[in-house]
Image (tube, rainbow over all chains, first blue to last red; front, side, top):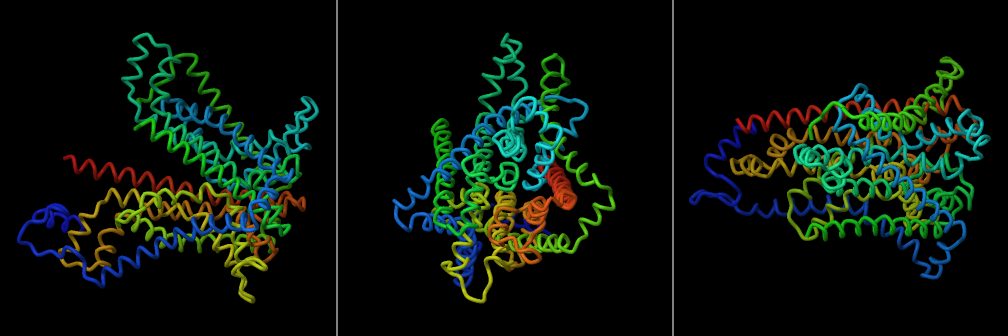
Length: 297
Length: 277
């Protein structure tokens, strides 16, 4: 049906602008349809506004409506500062590790044929399917102080995994693993093998080839993936709420702090920290976007 | 890039590093939770996950997922249509906003809904329960899963181009008829794909629903909230069992998604092949 119509149309009218003279085709829809178009647009944009803009507006108003000094007081409470700081550095460390391991995983998956590749692919996708809370449950089960692994680390190396930064970083790594892999993979697929092999045969070492040919090609995808991991990790709740625990000034992350403040009825404090988190995430996104655009301009 | 067999020792080393990393990070924890659920035997597991509160929690979860899926399917399609087909100022900025819910923490979405609809909230209406009740949780899940359908549909709609629609329209087909017979069939797989992603995300949603719903047992307790409580109560078999069921549902959904995606890709290559002939 569709092809019949398009074929029929192609024989008489080619494109939107290329209308044959003599054919009477309404250039503008009648007024009733015009209202229909505006109605559709209004409904669609209301949906977008209700899901994104209005929540951002509400949290900003709630955080700032009692004045800037109250906002500053709210976000400079020791527990709030500690929570934001912990969220930032654990998310940053995770992003660094995830970017390296994600890029390496993507490279292996694109470049090499080896037994067990299907299984590796499935493992990479699994964190997308597993609810983040369940990921947290898994790590508690594996790393708790009563378990073999948790006990080993605690008694032998004196390193606490659970309710401490190592556990937090692991939980964030788990939930973010597919993000870098799946953004870098398409960029690697498009990479020209000939270019790479040429660099290699002309005497460039493997490392040189990577640095001069592969890395520049996958740089934008790598940045996008890293940024996405970082922004997601800043707001992550399910995976870290059990793994990190809820000990203020010790292992309490910003998202868990917000949750605690809402539960305690202190919406001003919850909104204040939310505003800080959102500001960091959006500012970083826009900054990277702007820098990338300037590079390509 | 061409796929090759590993030749050098360094290749084997890199593959080994990645394999160990993936198994340690993802494989072992997954195996551990399955082991943990079966620790006290299958009978205990079945008992734990068929308790009335667990079944109720799963009912709430599925209800929220179905509701959010249905709503976002229609609204997401509409949004994609307007953002791709209509021309107006500020469109590029709005397109960038579609992905924003991925960056906004679900806990923050929950906090926003409590600010608006909670006790003493800006819009709280007496006797109309929104916060600490299902309507508020439904809104939360709809917001959190908002991008999936729209961002799946937008590229397909853009690739489709308006020519066929305009053709059908000029030949006298009504707008609705054109949409139903020309556009919708082309979008079917993208819509299903977006719906499955929405569903999978909604099943696992936790931060937003615990904040808005208030974790009231037997009322606003979803499967994830149940898992959280069961862990607190040291009911490990119940927690791990419910976690496996939830993860299993999502994995099945993801497989459906994969299959759909492969079908879409093969269809895409088939049509582009036909065009080049």
